[in-house]
Image 1 (cartoon, one colour):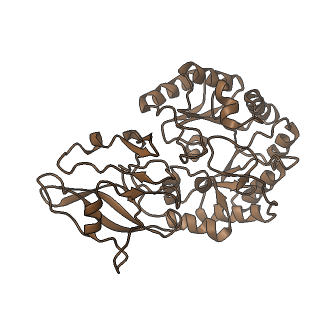
Image 2: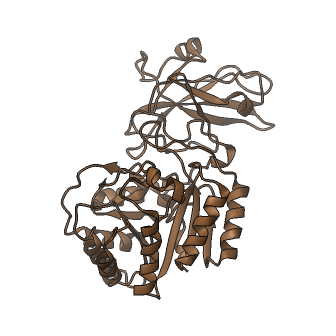
Image 3: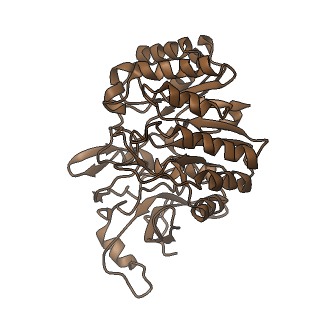
Length: 409
């Protein structure tokens, strides 16, 4: 690995070749850049991000060090291939995906205060703020490829992949995933979701069997099943949900089952059909506050129906535990959040999840208005418990099915 000469505290620059598997950057080449900090015993490399360079390269496929040196600090980087979801360490500059060419200012080598110098990335004249420190995660230590390979082998979709979940690597490394049924194309144009939208294909009759096989081979004790929204189906996919639950029950009888459903808007018969399969947890996300609801979830969605849906589940199946979640950071106020929590408790909702909204990419999706500090998530969690929620998960990386088994127990 080539390096520049070491100064007293940091090397000027360090570059290493990096290959990526098919689940991150489609086996393309990239460069990892960062600084070397000598310690008493050995130097420690502090990665800072991922660089993609389409300049001339030498016979080994690696850009010459002289080329990099001559062009610093204006290397072009891009994540056009796929979003950089693999976090090389706790200090990734890119955070959520940026899908345009970016001129990246490289931090001065002489300063030890690296974080203070890199404040923003310039994108076509606009500023993309870097993620705050609390939204940086370490990489898990293995296990990811087994889960990803099993999903590919069985032809299954996961929301972890399709929604670009920041917890994908962590969950996959623990051999767990949230299965996504009814295809990978959604009929709703939600402004926050990375799942593909458009005209869905036909249902796959053997999907319930394949899903149950995956649950068995992963050794799951708690199976979470979600789906795209299928407004093109008369029952919204409720019968397919029921078949998936029953297939898991047959093959993994000791597992508990949680469904994270679309809204089945104005279709209580579909809800009743799904509940015939007796899932232990019924989850439907509220996503945001009343004022922002149609902007975030699209014109077909209705806040009041979401509350009515959760209330209906309790009326039809009182033993089923209901669950809902919100994304924060879209411009909601504290009073609005607390109003939603009160409405959810009025609907007898048992479990609550609160997490930070992260924009899947710079194009098409809603922008992050504010990054919520962990202390504020703690405040909301404490308020939710006072309102009577039985279980609450509140934090920047919390998602609907993140550590779902812990909440269901």
